[in-house]
Length: 465
Image (tube, rainbow, N blue to C red; front, side, top):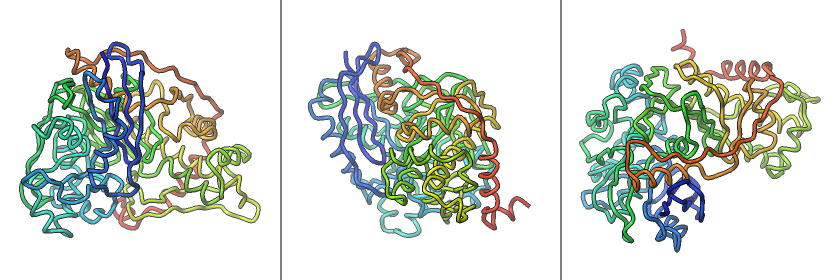
């Protein structure tokens, strides 16, 4: 028996075809998505069908894991109202602040929805549409997430479903009670709208055109947790377009500071998560600035000493989600005639990425997450310089599982669960991992923290007082 896992990310669709009993990969394919912060969902479908040609039809069960938070607004006939606003679109920053204040403040949001809304959350994008595109908002009769929409298409546009994991990133569903919060959606959109049914973990929610069972699917981070087989004490740090640190937990999280998002996972448990808007692109932006490729960036980085000659980068190139500074820009400090070398600039970028993600892990620990080991995944984790420097910045050994499409593998594992049935997903072998160690460099994080605090916006300083 074969199962297919689909990862519909910001940048591409990736599909893996696996044996249902042990997860062994027997086929893979990919197709690109348009770049940007909004996208016509038809582009995702085109990429899925292109990548899945002669591959998906071999699967006995299928599941989709996709980028979280994206707003897919549908009219009464099920047609897409406007291009989907994606998680990395920060235009709704004013609406995020307004909604947070209107509905009881950060503490009330954390208690009801598990999270304080960030600019990436679906609920904030609905408010932006209501204010800036009232005609589109008035036409909106239902709202789906990217994985919901693709699952619905695969199932012949019959029942609309979602799962606990992806629902927990909307801002209008409660991980603690497992219920939609229609008053939060209505406050954002200006009127009520249909929401998909939240399927049980491992449930069969439909059937594809070729007769395969359709699993509920989930969000990309939840898919990665399934693909890695995360257990209590494991923290995954994903270095992709965004940066995330997440762990499985038995109980819901409610952080009124908004740093930790209290998501659910795809198995019936919870997935406290910290997300940064800037991650692997810190490396690509810096490589572009220096006129080199990422391999040469690694070479330059490793030619500099720890601390980059006193050069420190705050890498908020695209604004930032953690901390919540959507209008921020990148800042560099410590440039002198002696320190302004290509090697130091490269090293400062890699150290900044590591510091940002180490802060994310620390935030999880502050909210009760036990850390026995940290696993590095994602495209950025393939950087030789990052693998060597991150353990020094984190101050602990890090494990780097062999490169694989863990989001797609997690979706495939969920498909195998739906195919087999039972209360828990099938046990697949853990991926082999490389352990990376280095002498700690606490002064690097100290300087980074100093720059981060010195650039705190005025309204944050006022709230801190």
